[in-house]
Image (cartoon, rainbow, N blue to C red; front, side, top):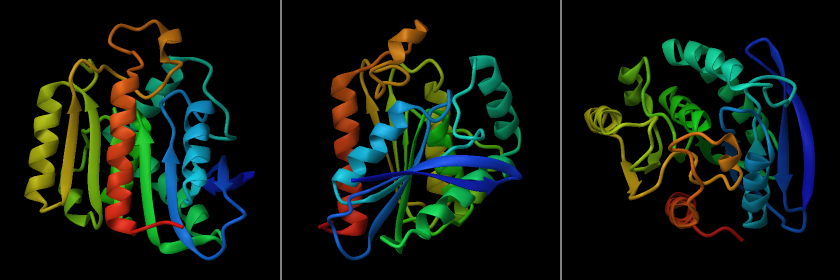
Length: 241
């Protein structure tokens, strides 16, 4: 497997993402953009990219803060995220640039692309879909579902999957209902999986280190949500050699 750090510019900032691709395969294959959690580009999203590459996809773990470095503390993340929630222009630009890096890889079929993300990375994948990006699918794991521009859901071209913990303190039922209405009003092909007993960041085995109420790894929800994503990819991409 080839693992390569790639520097690129997005929204006027130098970014560094990680490409993962299985070199023993030949021909073009689907590409998956992986959008990291709010803390920055770390092992969680890098490992997801490697796992996807092992399944036959070209995977690019994007950076949306700069230089591919995690943030020093959560307050920095909240400053970035708060600004992008008020106006998603910047995060959309950063995701669009990263998608361009993925689509431009020689192994990538630019007509078979998806974006997935975790926590605010899931929000990022949804915002990218709302731009009308050429995505067959967008997936958000324990992702914030709100947006300042719900009318842009009309631009979505691909299929949407969100995987949410029922007990997630960041994503209350009211936010889920608003998202359902947004997607339905726009005529989007969407689905939402809600996992009973699961909280926030249920896919991240290391999340317990934060010691935050409502944040916990849930191996059952993690496995089920991964399977749901692969099922969607099989649906939109067909078999991957």
